[in-house]
View (cartoon, rainbow, N blue to C red):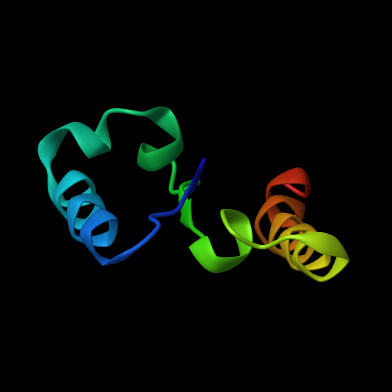
Length: 68
């Protein structure tokens, strides 16, 4: 699970959600597979540079899971 918040207000709301009791319910969170990603890349990034950075994130977070 990849999570991002665009803007300060959204980041504050995200902190409330991830700090609340319901956040532990999804299996991805319980198994420590939820990752906070950079909203400037994942949400507003455009073009080849942003795509490359998203692929770097996917490699960083998903490759260890594939090795298990």
